Image (cartoon, rainbow, N blue to C red; front, side, top):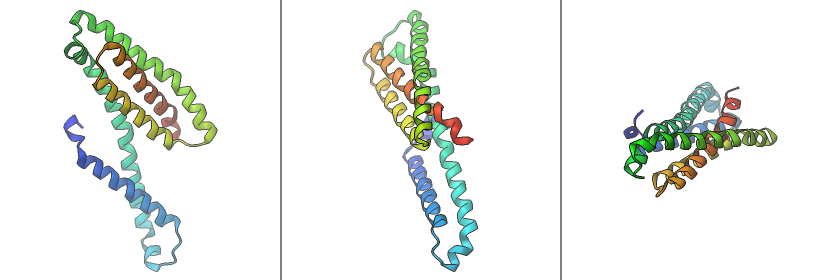
Length: 171
């Protein structure tokens, strides 16, 4: 999956998968007494499970693509946009990666405790994706290195939230 693959049609398909999963879940949970629906229930269950599995597979992929993109291209961003000299880039990448990692390590246990206390996981995944997207947006328009570091901290916050609940979702 490359940057050119993440286009509006992808989001339309993802929305359709979410709607299909939601509609299928309602049909499965509702006992309408309709013979046709009862006969189609195994098919509806299979399609609903497939849509759910396919759609939830994309969330971690997109989050990790965001992490990979910022880690892979930050040196170029620092040189081209923030006008760092090549000699300064290694230190700046170290500091920004340290900020992202420290933020993730600080917020992951907090998110895990809150998630365990309220017994919900999926809202945390959605929140993590939104927080990470905000961090990417801040990084995209960062006029200075301190603002870029704030963006890395926000992305670390999102990554920490996600990592806290991702394992729990699959167990």
